[in-house]
Length: 149
Image 1: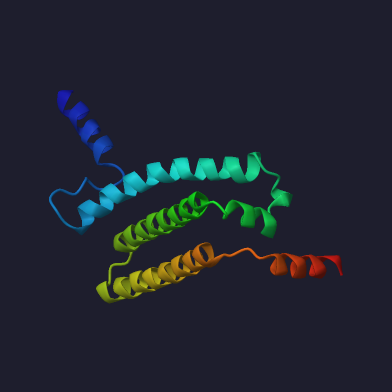
Image 2: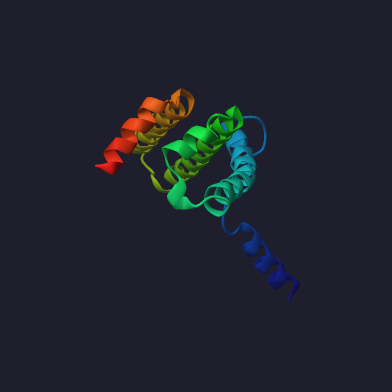
């Protein structure tokens, strides 16, 4: 009877994710980053949802709203942190899925490379948008003229 309980415990503890990697290296860093970024993203996403969808009307989220928000460097840094952590967290998850399901090394390298390049492209696009956004009255007036027509 005791052997059967021991078998059930080992079956339950071995189900799911692999064991935590030990020692220095990429997999250990990846394991810790996945957990820390996941906890950070929970708080960042909840604050984002509260600020953007509860405190403010979604229909009022336009150019002027973003211009007022990005006048404060804190919100630019906040959005850049949210973008960076979300992309890296998702990329790490996709990398782990590729490691688990793509057996051929060349194919796995190709897929992971495409994922990294795509993530880098979207990160650069988001970073350029966040950093270089400069509100101007001329842009606001021209946007309003387009909407009024």
